[in-house]
Length: 137
Image (cartoon, rainbow, N blue to C red; front, side, top):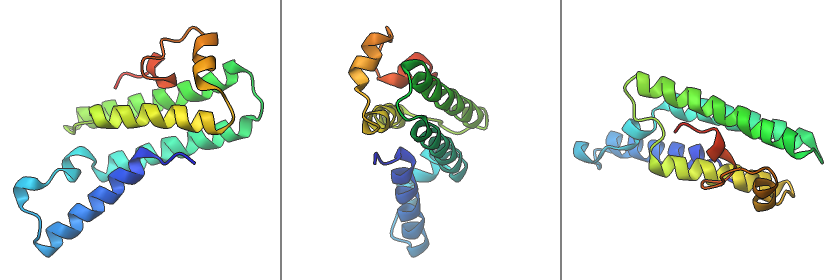
């Protein structure tokens, strides 16, 4: 199963917190709390869990149904990103964006769907995979 990008964010967040508590990380090297506040990690995790549940419930679905599931998840991530940016956080930066796009394609592919063919059949841009048509991040 494709790993959720926020799993890596959480690990790095926790490692950083432990190093701060131990006094082994200088304050000028703190990044995880800035990039991935707990609220971003948790809300992203909930959105991706819902995406996975919806996708796996489809079973041999037409392209339209698959793309609707992807679209709903991406729109949810747009909302999460916007909330965090308005609150003064970074939101999804370049690395996070790339990881999220790769995650969507990998997760759909693991369901036995030929992602490049799905993109081609539906006239999607596909620059960043399935998510590209709806993402604002």
